[in-house]
Length: 106
Image (cartoon, rainbow, N blue to C red):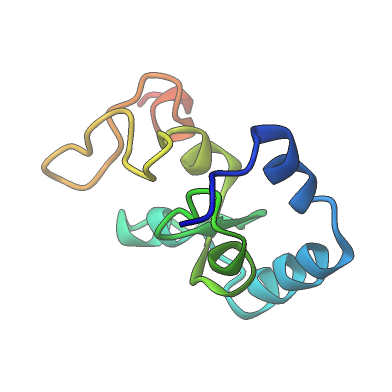
């Protein structure tokens, strides 16, 4: 069984031309944040997220499934792609810093 690559090595994978092409393609075919859509909001995506996480496996990094997310939703995920803050029963995010909760309150 191969050993887990060092975090710095994994971080470098994101700077490759191959990843940049794959990211651009993902955002082209799925331009809206998937998690926002599931919560009934329309938000432009800017992050190609590995779902499930690649866990340092280069093959999973290069070939594993992706989903498009906005920066705010991506920032709310932990290392296992699980929201750090639970979603409320109505589907809205409960995180106090999520844009949904920072917007103008009426």
